Image (cartoon, rainbow, N blue to C red):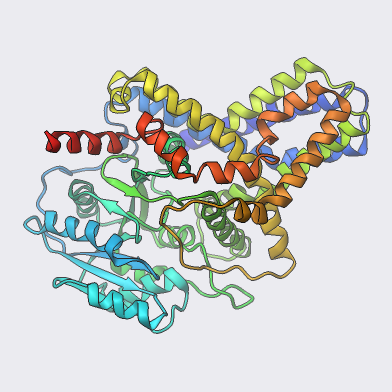
Length: 550
């Protein structure tokens, strides 16, 4: 059954790509071809594969979510009882940290261990890569009885090295390992489900749980994760349908078969001697090549993570992921991977590789408009291209919104359809502004790496904070200048061209106020009071607080 589904997926991908290319060529052909128009079309050729992937995953995921009685189980058929089967396998619950505040790391781990105490053999571990002696001493002092603490003296291989060092010493004692990040939160029910899936199928190497954002106070993370949740539910479900046992691994909130992971997922340095930064997809491909299944449980319940508190942290994280994913180009030619393993690496590269192409299209279009190329642009064709391009790119998220609006039970978890729609509209505006400035930012990061800058894997700030106008200006003045230059080009052609470009590029000249406002305590407080972009978990927590206050 998997082969026909995969064939259908790639047919959808190809049809989407060819259709969008035809629309672009039709728009550009009016008034005759020029070098600038040819370059725009060439850049668009590099963009459309990702758009096809978006549409294919979105259509598959939406169909499963609307038609299946139990969507996660529909895309991950499991033999046996995953609700009540006894837990007989020792499980290590391992949290990887580096310079993390222990008052945020320990409570969710201790709560999870307490809820699992009478269910099965679960043991908690804190795996520290903290290098600062003072911070390390504070970590060690905070560890309560019953939780094991281990700190490496050198963080060789970064997180991947941290995990492998643990498995080298403990994989035989703990056949299963639940990997958690410092900001991970999982419920006992979610963990037990993963354990039972692994117990039922000895060939299962990784079961990756779909993860949603923790309730957030600041405006930036609450808007980002509101849309991410809708899109990832559809994306992960659709992807799981056609990828099956060749699924992804996102590095946390996942259950590993310890010995298999230890034996098959050791990462050699890259040809230049540098370590692999984005390790998870490589590990999944290596484990699959060894004959183990890598699957996704595409359910939202019980698995959460925190998102960056403000735009600077978000873009710093994106730059780290970009540097890591682009390293995969060195691995594609290595022997041993399956075809789907290579596909996972290609897909990870495409996630970021389109950024300079999008930026080039924007600047070339502005240059074309400024030199008279916008006068002959057919308005109807441009409208069709704009709508098709946007719907393809955001299809997982948009269909995720449609799914909730069509399902009253789902909508009620968000406070009803009207309240959910308020959040969706706010998030769509937020995403258009964010994507407009994030794409050139990724392009600049890629340029810095190409010129010799060394990517790092620095500790993350996870605490809510405001962003000053000075900090925002220092970081985003290049984006502002780029945006003003682009819109000057569009304005030279006509104000109609400015209006067409505004939804997809206005985030550039607005980058500085966007950064400040989405981190501002006043704006964040207003969003919380109005429950805009509130997740079901936030609403449930608020209901419990009201109940206990009575």
